[in-house]
Amino acid sequence: MFICNSSWSFHRMIPQRMKLLEFPAKCASLGIEAVELLEYHFESKEEKYLDSLKSACQKAGVKIACLAIGNDFTIVDDKERAKEIKNVIESLNIANYLGAPVMRVFCGTRSVTDAAVHRVIESYKEVVPIAKKLNIKLGMENHWGASVNPDNVVRIIEGVDSPYFGSCPDFGNWQPDDRYTAMAAVAPYAVHVHAKSHAFLPNGEEKDLDYRRLLDILRDAGYDGALSIEFEGKGNEITGVKKTVALLKKYL
Image (cartoon, rainbow, N blue to C red; front, side, top):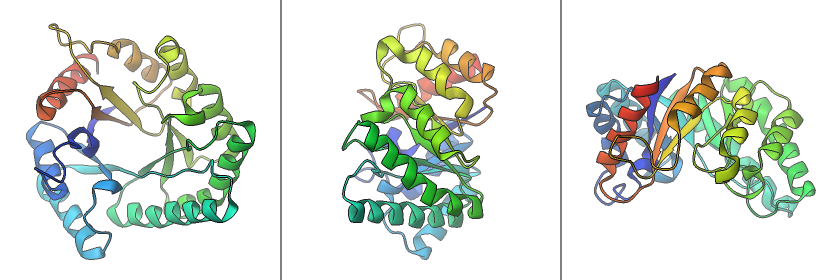
């Protein structure tokens, strides 16, 4: 496993006080070897801007581990959902251009019914042939809606049934009383991981998340990919990322 940082960690800084093009160098200065870029933070999707992003990462000596996008496949209206599918495919092409081996995707929050889960499965079945062609893995995050239930995550992944579609488990997005059993359920399908953090104890441990236990779950599942930091706490974001890096290194 290796440490990565999501541009979401600096979402209060980007773009007001930091351009995304400055993000790779900042991560390198913190001893982080890889980055996750949120499409939401892109100033443009034109080739010239994408080339600038690639160049910024190369100059900083960090690799692009993941492109993160937002989508909702629980939408009932077929035409609207078709637009979502088209957008995801377009983003896959951007991920390919950037050289990202993984793209973080969502399930959706419009509905949590069995029918909605079925729509998600069928939508991803339309997307995975493109992911396969481009050799990019899709990692669906447990990002609210139906995906906070690990049974739904497993059901969707097994329903899509493709080596190019797996999970992106987020440490902090499970129900608190179900966090570790949920992680254990989806960890075997993980293609990317979000190491969420909010606040820290004086000894450096995360206040509400047992990082040692979480990393042991991933190790036991054979996961060997990115641990992408998502600091969402109060206070200085750079300090929060530094503390998360130190905590990850403690248990790697």
